[in-house]
Length: 269
Figure (cartoon, rainbow, N blue to C red):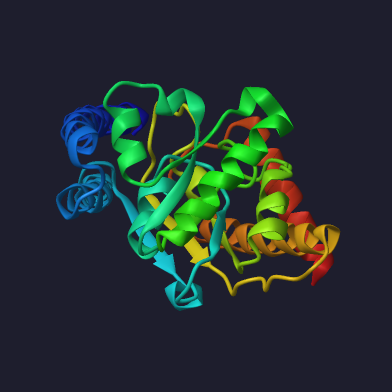
């Protein structure tokens, strides 16, 4: 089973990385000349749609995104849990015109960075720490003015499933200064496609878009509410996936975290 799934994963990665490189070159070159166009946005949407199809057909990983009606019509910040590359292209089609927060290193890759910039991505230099926030805020305001919805992963990087949360201050600054609703997103993708995982496992990767948090709260109240909302719903999605049965083997660390989740939910109820 492991060998077969490894081969399926290798085939998916070959197609995924190959078409990503080709589309990045096309979008990047068009972006250098004409910026974002209907054509390049159509290619970006195709990239998202096709990745979901290839995952399902090749690796057996299905996709479900629910709660799209919770995204408000106007400008907002979409704050999603981040466990996998799946999170990027699964959420993208439901965000209208998204402006993703992207780390500076990716924006410096030839073609890919040009493509990302033409698709409204916002650059953040994490190596500068708090000094990078003002420039990120300037780009975020400009994106909102263009009709974008800001998409940010508030923990800054992909996390292992059920790992302790680590929310950064960037999301708090954005909430306080941009004065728009924040839409939390919970997900369970890391159970099937983890960070640097050599194997993508069959199952159902789910994202749950939750009711927006209104502007105007204090920093502490907002962060607590965001963290509690995302983590509680992520735990629920994780528990449902585990109860339905996982095809992947459980390493000791993940097994311990699942046992802790079960104990926490048993105590809660």
